Picture 1 (cartoon, helix red, strand yellow):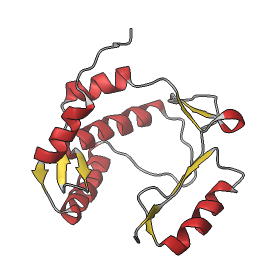
Picture 2 (cartoon, rainbow, N blue to C red):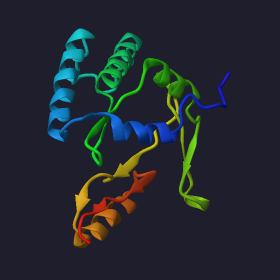
Picture 3 (cartoon, one colour):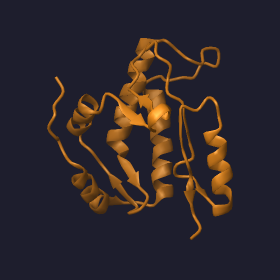
Picture 4 (spheres, helix red, strand yellow):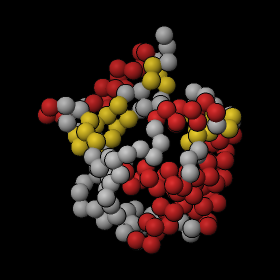
Amino acid sequence: MRDQGRFFDFLEVIKRAESGEVMKEADYDKRLGKKALSLMKQYEIHFDPQCVIPSDDALADRIFQAAVDLFLDLGVYCTDTQRVIRFTREELQWALENGPQEVQYGREKETVSVYPRKVEDKRDPVCFFSAVGTPVTEEMFLPIARSYAQEPLADTFSGPLITSY
């Protein structure tokens, strides 16, 4: 049964973004790379170019556990405050169990439903085209956004960030 209450709220996340461990983005990125490599070895996660979409349930379980370990160890980096936001295992578990079962993007005939896919899910994945977080000049914004919007494979898209004022 899904818990309709809140384990923590968004204001708590903002507080953590303002009070978490101070760290330079480059240092966080280095930790991320090192930890990811370490977890790949620990959980024996290997890419097989002959099997681009693996169906190995044990591999899926190991990847999930590695992702949990990575998230709990490193937290989330907030670029605005240059701080690390950390969560407990209980908070993560609550979020995974109580997250939305579907989110809708767009409107009218362009509405797209996004849902969590399970291992061996028969439904097609939703194809996002996005440059979110990518800084671009004002001159490049429209051509980039247009290229995403006209891509037939895209179920939904988001534009980049304009860096000029």
